[in-house]
Image (cartoon, rainbow over all chains, first blue to last red; front, side):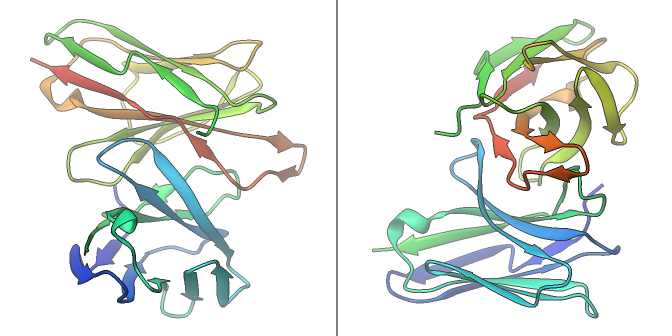
Length: 111
Length: 116
């Protein structure tokens, strides 16, 4: 079963705009991770945030985590057409990478 | 490129048949996890192998089984295939050292299985 849901299910923006995706989950976690998937192929790890962290940055990515609300958000700034992909959040409650994924957000960035 | 490879890339089987999918972990990794991703869904955890032993299983029936070999490559076997087994099967490898582990898990490109 899925851990939670991502919102929105689909997002369409223009190049240069920012994209924000939200993830909600149900149980206590050790960490939360965001992955990107292009065209239904392998997943690419983007960023990991631990349960005792509130915000993390990596390049154009900014992730926040609110454990009291059991939610996280991923912000991609200055989007590019190459950012077009599906984005998934995944929670790890054991600390041993037995990940529980959300339902994903499909992002389309138009030139 | 993550260094994790899977074979075959695509596979078509008929209901009731058996299938074996293979995964070669990234060099130096000792843990492999398998996930099933149905169309339009997020991946679901099937099981994990650490040093050739099963180290946790998701909500999948026993007809899903696995192996991890001394070189840390892995197989996923599915018996008595059902139509709902049609999905993308992903393996992921990571390094676990005692009580600590490398948090980044590297995924392979997946095997797309179609059951007719």
